Length: 265
Length: 294
Image (cartoon, rainbow over all chains, first blue to last red; front, side):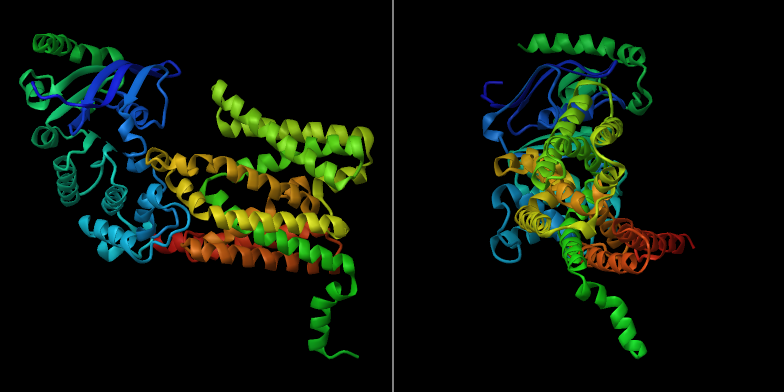
């Protein structure tokens, strides 16, 4: 690659342990500006922990995370929907409007003018315009995820971190949210997204980052598929916690990836 | 002879026209209900009611030390309460960060310890009447000076809640999103601290009327009841304030005409409202949930 790319996120030997459980072990990697990366791996592989560390919600116990200074305050982090307070007493418009906070602050009215237009546009983009005055608690899982995407649209972040945005929602919503992610990608935003669906990864995500405690491979998604690092035989849901099992399943491919990486340099 | 209507009015109103101490008690209770209710609603949303409960007991050793040094001095006890709450919150943060202890366990430990330390200290110097006063408060004994403190704290607290309202609501909904969205420059990161400070000054004011054991009642009980009747913040805040005010008034009337002390009487009415709402409220009550199953 001749073209100079700016790194938006650099991971340098990041480790994080929960008691004796090693969630992340010496994970390194670079996420260039404008990249669209899928983070995949078995349950308990430390994917959510990694995303929280990049978001700055958690601090790594070892190693460093460097996020480009230009991105400070322009990070959009979406936690897993199961970690959210779905019955919080806000209506849909108010919840989406919270995305305006960093620019607007405590007192300006969201009821008219440019801010309102921005919220209305975001509600339309995700197809929730008819739900603006409903209470959040009345939304289905898919509608709630649309609401969170609308809040991101309103927030207008440069680095977007999504933690399993497609878990337990309907196919139609997935399709429309994917379109939104593609639109963000076209606009040159950096996107890191945790997901399980290999079909979606193969079809839409140019870069992948494979995680099972350690980084098991990263790079172009199609290369990873060619090297069988990512493959449809590999049922990632089945590779649950016992660390040895995970290690052996990935170990050969891990070294293959290293060789490929060195060859490139 | 009075006709029946007049007798009801007499029953309901005369306590407050005949006695200055009942007037002061009513004003104090109404002030506490109105400033405490929005705080209670926010505490429910932040799932902080147990933490708040622990904090309300945590002020006891500070009050006890103040009592040791200065007797039943209003300002010494207030200062002591604030300092004790700060120390206990600091210890809780220390325990949860540096050990594997969970926050609720840390607060339970500190709550029991502070209760024991407080009761021990007061018993060493004072009588059991002093102990009862500190544990259960005595809203009927509120003098002019205490009333000014209580109402002053309530006004300050209402003003701060109004000024920081949007921040509190956003921070309670999704604090992580707000921090990553660059909101710390606008002070959302400090919202946990500001909320804690508000809670603390309200507890210290409330302690004068309700004692350390029930200081939380006028904050959380009306808020709990309100949540079963409305789903919106706009509905919940005024409803909780109104229910708190009604409970204060009804509790004082109940206490005046019976042998029930004023603090427990107010808590009984407010608690009754919460239980009634949990049974029969419109949203999320036993009745509403049973309706959904059929």
